[in-house]
Length: 441
Image (cartoon, rainbow, N blue to C red; front, side, top):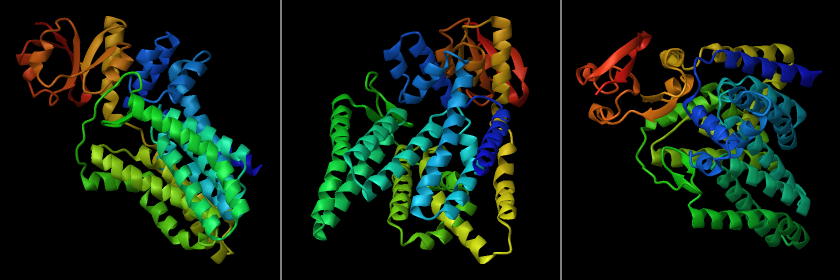
């Protein structure tokens, strides 16, 4: 009954958050395009879009039964719910059942997780697989066997197919096994060290093969985001990121309140090796992502969510300790306080400022029909117009060689009044200064 209530709560909050989405997220357009290209048999072009293929492939597979957008949302929400029992087992192994329950309650209602896990993004699927990887790693370290090593290696392969950060998990697994093996040898526990080697071999093989593929094909590169370029190739543009922007996104990935709980709860986990491993993986992933995103000049709170999910463990330990010290406070009341504190922020409409672009796209579809080429800063207008997205060039003059095509822009995109003066005809204006133009010369 408790699990039914928890899953129902998590699903309800995510469905409410989904209903509040004003427009599709930018990256979602590309994921859907990859799935459509896969359905058309254009696999090479699909991989060239710039994202790892795991999530788009699932959209393509489920798209046989649902529209692609609905399939994408369904996969994201299903992965979010599937992570609940995985995290519960991990938190129970690392602490106790009471802490595990508080951990999954916070996960179920955490506003950043809720918002990101209903988007057409691979984030929700990656969080689920990252939690499964951590659980498998903790158990493989406790009782190393070849079967557990193979399961762990399989999970690592899936992580990399979903997002490029999966390669960090492979590195973490190899390093953890190596460190533990060295410790066992120094303690004279050679039988256990040999068992660790057996469990370690599949991960080592995966790391060697994966590393060879990456070096031979350039399978990972950094640009605005790490991308899949095995078949497409690609370059990188790096630049610094403002510390304030990165700090804000990092704090919001867990919210400052949960960060405080995590700090307060960490001492309660100091005696459990499984807790050490889970927290160390979370902190390590968070740190590496912060460094990498800072170097490439790009950030987003969804990049930190795999680490945030693991770091709910010390936060849950803090809540469990509060409940232990206040025995007269019913658990249901404390849970209700957490739910209200976390769930209410998820009800706001997401990307409301981008809504005029949706209206513009829907107007283009209704008046021009599908298939229009749409120049804009963001892909939403072209998506809702069922057309082809082209990014606005640096200058208006570059547009003039494409007469008859459409531009959706705000006054500031290419200079106030510049579009009309250069010969583009305004067809329809929308709130927020968004205008649909036609290129005439």
